[in-house]
Length: 154
Image (cartoon, rainbow, N blue to C red; front, side):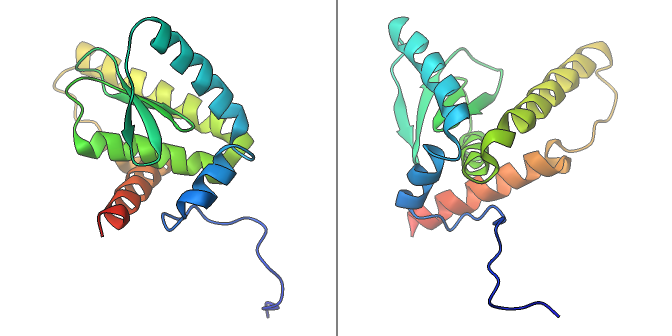
């Protein structure tokens, strides 16, 4: 029987984060990924890209028809990005708050999976692929980002 007095050390990712907790976790536990994101953001600013705010994230619009990416509180999305895609990338930012130094492993899996899927779509366009969110980290990002942004609308 579990002792109710023992607190869980590992918290499951939760879209109910307050803004304060989001930034506190992002710039402590999730700092390594944010440092990489800040370097990319600085490069984008130097090349004339202007960010916009999306939820608690800083979003840069780059290119078109490619999707998006997230590095901590910094997001990159294509010009024709849907709200769902931006929410998904924001979900990866929430994951960073919980997975912290492990997040680069999730980012690597996510990026590799995206590139492999794009390659398959080019080589075998008739091949049926599983839904994008079928990988746990992608489905979790979509659920977290959507729930978080819906909470902010209330």
